[in-house]
Image 1: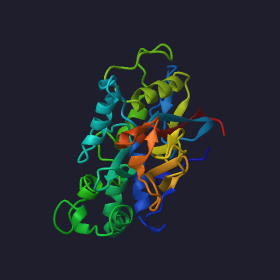
Image 2 (image 1 turned 135 degrees about the vertical axis):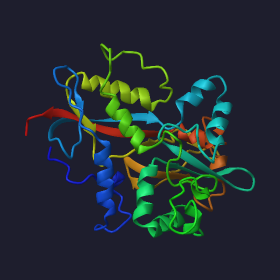
Image 3 (image 1 turned 90 degrees about the vertical axis):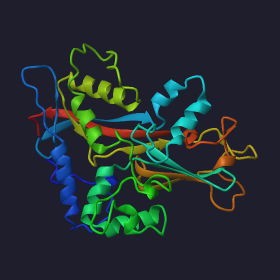
Image 4 (image 1 turned 90 degrees about the horizontal axis):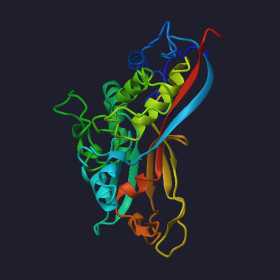
Length: 323
């Protein structure tokens, strides 16, 4: 595989002109976050920076997990209603939503859900986009959330101040990117790189370390650790990012009992590399999302839909010194 000359943006989105210095800045961020960690004299593999190390790729693999937070399900294993209430509850911080996917629920005056939006976009991308071209960030917020958004709504202070990722249009009044404290691309990169160090693990059935209460952490640890023990060189596949990869409404029904139509809409990204996904019944249908049923139960929380959304990070494995 040829060396990566410039790391691409997640899902290859183009929010600025092609000649913008933003794209070099994004490359530098990723290159600075990826460290080639070769192990010599052992059977352990390495994690590598594809802009520095040329590896003959033998296989690619996507790690997939459910968007709904596992730790909430475990805490409320005998009370699903309590699990859904907790997962949807903290709109200002979205703390329970710690699987690198967060969602925002919109309701009508009767309290019924009209729309749920899921995102996997990292705060690092939006912070760098703000530094490069804040007017572009304002324009995206206006398109994605509310046409009335102004620059003042998105900054921490007066003119020229930093981007406020906890602005109301990314918390209480909408959603644009991840804000939960461990849902960052930096955290995902760190988890991936650290997972080659499997310590005393002797096989692929080793119990995950304590504290890994999410679905994604043990999945990444196990899969990357198993590949590293074969001596392969590992990295994340371009374009590096956190993605929604699937959604399934099998068995969902309309109020009259007939199967639902396709109410999913990819807003940013592309199939398999989705950054923003909306679920909304078209106007004029005579009913809203909150009137639909999943397994005979009316949709009351965004978490009910999140259980049917899957996320992914993709990796590559190969060997040095060939091709």
